[in-house]
Amino acid sequence: MKASRIAAAGAVAGATVLVLSSPAFAHVSVQPVGEAAKGGYATVNFKVPNERDNASTTKLEVTLPADHPLASVMPQAVDGWDTKVTVGTLDKPIESHGEKITKAVTKVTWTADGDGIRPGYFQQFPISLGALPEDADELVFKAVQTYSNKEVVRWIEVPQEGQEEPENPAPVLHLSDAEDDAHGGSAGAAADDDTAAAAETTAAEADDDSSGGTDTTARVLGIVGIVVGAAGIGYGVLAGRRRAGA
Image 1 (cartoon, rainbow, N blue to C red):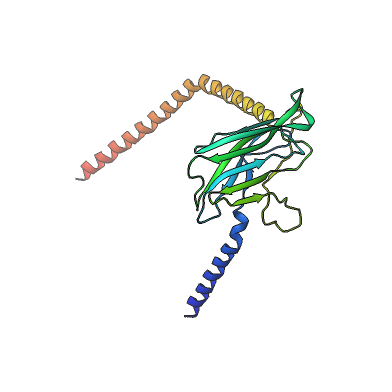
Image 2 (image 1 turned 30 degrees about the vertical axis):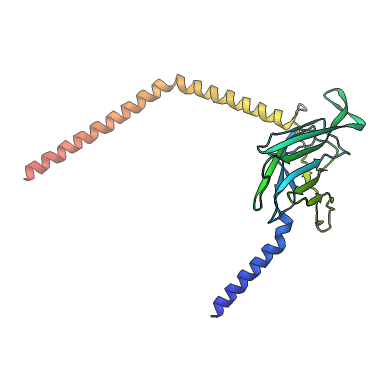
């Protein structure tokens, strides 16, 4: 009886924790596919959960950071959604691959051409971004979520370090430090070099194995033959003793 009461109290407490903590996990967020390194390019997913029980999410607007404009922004097509890319003139031109860029993507909008994100579901919206800034630790993307009942939720509040998360936090992409090899290349280039070296080593080992393969095979077959022969002799001797005993 006492144990059952404790179990029931624990279940209620657990449910209460879930109810109280669920809003913290229900906002629009952004996460990289792999790594988002400073100075590099990355693919990120904007994850949009539907928070309503009686309406679907039918539109998402993501505003790109104006303080760190990105020269390359390419959204991936999402089934059931129309995508619109808005380009604006930059207050301060940026350079990309030796060229001066005066215009860049400022907003990407997805509009559902069907039911959208139904209650109890979420949707991811991928974008390829670059080059990521080298002088920032994070990028803030302000998002606006629209429901089928015309309700609009603005995820635009910038989280502050050391403070509680705001009610409607903006999606924040955290950037990792870029790793350069001894020649000043990127971490990806270093990885490619390591892969190539490993491939060459494997090929060399394969050549060595193939050149000595005939000798090794002959030795193995010889040993197997000796073992089989010895086993045959032993079996014959044992069988003879059994016949003699009979």
